[in-house]
Every structure is written in structure tokens, then in C-alpha cells.
Length: 299
Image (cartoon, rainbow, N blue to C red):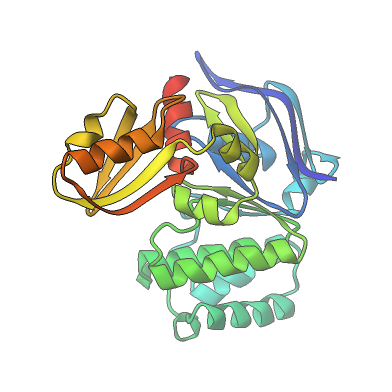
């Protein structure tokens, strides 16, 4: 069974088509990346899955049911914009949000205590939300999204405002949710997190789905056309005819090769120009490179 099914879904605002005949299947029990540049249509798509918005045409099913108020209760949603009540106490707002999903006050209070302890927020439980830092507020909002143990979790920029330690905690929880059978839809611009966690992706640009499928297969389809080079000395070889693009970093560069180019020709050019090569590795392109290529190609 698929967790989410979109069949030729379209949504327009006045003269702007935010989502244009998008068809998509997200299988149950997976972590899936919903990607795209700003304004691509991701948030509109999420809001239609949540039944906050209704599509102009097409059909949406969530967990094998037509999208409705009932299916909304099956979803844990963390929006990019914080939706907490700033004057409420932290524990109270968590319990209130859980009650909206049908939990008793006693059960919600028990689970709230467990989650607050996991995120090291217990001492803040009786503080007002407004008194918390942005990172702390993000952790509280994450708790409200998963506390009722939904079978489908949609997380829009869940790592926003989190330090590396807490980002790792959120990552681990996402993996736990998947292992427990939940489906996790991750919408983020942090491509390195998507590469580490997601089994498949859907890339939306200008309202259309321009790339969809298993992440491993997508990367393999590009072949090994990227060279990771760490070097010291002259860098004139980076303008070699085999080079299609260069991304410089502190100790070297990632070089995208032209179709059919020989990486050994680039290595030879580097040595001949006097560069000291410390690392030379042929790689599949990063998801970040694929993202840039597909979104600029369809701009």
C-alpha cells in the first residue's frame, strides 16, 4: 500500500499554477525526500495532502483513503513556519496538540514527559513557549508532530534552528519511525541529509515533478562523472577541455566531467602542470549537483 498517491493533481492561485498535473506514489514504510527550490510547489502539495487545501483537479489518497478530515488525523505535520501558541506553557501546548489527535490528557501527559526528557527539555516544561530559543521551539514542534504516533509524518525543514547534536537526535528518531512502520516525508534544502536518509526522492520545479524514483538508481543513472580532487599547487588543469564544471573548496575541488571524458586525462594534466595530488577519486554526482542540474535545466 502506498502512503500517499497523487494522480494528475493541479492547484492554481489566480494566474499562477503552483502544482501542475503532478502524479506521485510514496510507498509506505519509507523515508522519502520531497525536494525543490523555493516556490516550486512543495508546500502547496503538502497542504493538499493535509486537506488544508483542495486541488483544482486530480485525486489524492492518503493511506489508501481519499484525502479528508479523517486522513488528516493520520498525519503528523511539522510546518516550516512554527505553529505553537507562544503564551502557553511547553507541556500544556504539547498536551493540547495531542488532544486534537484524540489522545487522553493522561496519555498525552505521559508521552510529553518522555519526549521532553529525550530532547533535554524537562526543565523547560513549565516555561512559556515564547521564552524558548528558536532551536528549543523547533524541538517542541517536532514533538507535537510525532507524539500521537502517526503512520505518516511530514516534516518541512525539520533541522531548522537545530545544532548538530539535536539534528542527530531528530535524524535518529526519523529512522526509528521508519523502522516502526511509519512513512516519513522529508522536505528540506539540506541535500546531505537527504542523501544519508532517503530511499527515494521527488523533485518538483515550477509545479511539475521533474525527477522521481529510488535515489540509488537515480545517482547510478548519471554514472561516475564527478572527480573529487584534493591538491596543492597550480590549478590550471581545472580548465582542461574534459571539464564541464568546477566546485572549489578549501583543499581542492569537485570537478564535473563532460560526457565521454576520460578522468585519466584530467589527472595527467594536473601532474603536468605541477599540482601535488593528495586525492583523486571518481564518484557519482552528489544529490546537490543533480538538484542544481535538474532545476536549472527546467527553469
